[in-house]
Image (cartoon, rainbow, N blue to C red):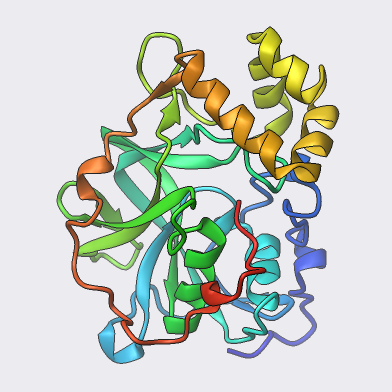
Length: 277
């Protein structure tokens, strides 16, 4: 779709250009206010909400920074993928946004979906083609033995996804953390606050051992995490050792969904330099 005359739809003009992978305290990045077509450096109006197999696209729920156009563009550009990505703001029932029980090598503590029957959230559905899906899989560590996430199929009615055109999707993919999620002190998954500074501040305040590893401030945490893969692994183990971790409630979907929709397609994740959170 072309850009409306006289309207600046660049990510910078829309306030959506920030990249959490480059500035961790921006995580999860700015989300659009409405659906759009991410086309290079622009977010254009979208004229449809649902795609199907004939379009060669599958629905993927964006829980954290995958809903940030700046972050999404950055991921695609690393593999030279320039094809447009439809981003559809949708009403999702049955999920909430939890806190991943791992320290990201990008320098932040990321979001992860948790099962939450009856909870309603406004989330984005990305309609990805084969190359785009392979890029996001790689960025989440799906194909890697030491990766942090599994891609799972969440079927309706367990998770109800309404893209705003009156329809309900039969299901959608999401990325479930292999380490589990952090709990809120009662054993229930804690909700991601949607900003890094308050989250990291609280995590550091609650653990002297975490402060010893990552410093006393969010800035120190991010700088140290980005510089040291082994340190991130130690932080991840510490979450478990301090019994901060619980299940997301979505583990039962791992390996239970439909076959890989694009089996045999391009796999950017085969590149050993593929960045992984």
